[in-house]
Image 1 (cartoon, rainbow, N blue to C red):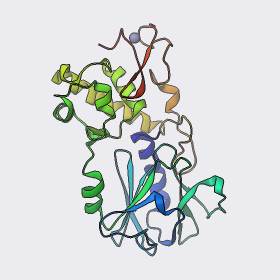
Image 2 (image 1 turned 90 degrees about the vertical axis):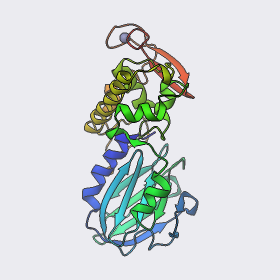
Image 3 (image 1 turned 60 degrees about the horizontal axis):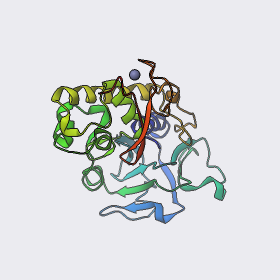
Length: 276
Ligand SMILES: [Zn+2]
């Protein structure tokens, strides 16, 4: 599932392709993947048709594309969503699962495809509406998180710290991969109850989250299955995971066997020697 680094990589590879381009035609092929927020409708105009793209923005795992007339299209990739740019509009078959597309004034196109349909689009009349109606419930973005924010949002909780990191209201953009990686990097066991973490623990964890996410962005994200950037390229960070997907293998630090268990309903891998 794409997490913050994958969505940020899509944003960085997409933006130079579409900035300043006018949307000639916008097409929603599956209505049920698109939700209009206050004041928007599922019309081509609200999907940016006739407008010029002036910017992109990301909060957590969500990507916004906004135009000169104010309208915004917000994309969530879900489990298997791909937002790609192509030099011309392809001829789609049902197997492409292309649910929406935008053709630009130079003939190039942006396509949203999502076979498993856990992702989707939201339309908003302007960025403040998107922030209020869609992003208002999200915690601080993972790239900007700091210990005080984690402590404030989760510090009194009895649940384990892994579950707290997966909660998008605590910190936005961290999923299963980077939660495990950040906990390993900070030496904190995922099973620890949040209220047992000290302020220094939260500070160390926040710094690890920022560093792990930043490193993953530098590597173009992690491609485990479907994820591609806007140009169709895979990420390479999956080759650098210290714990994620390595249950039963040797810890890179102490050579002990990595533990794997289900925590917060997700497979979790950690080192009982290195993480306390
Ligand atoms: Zn270890």
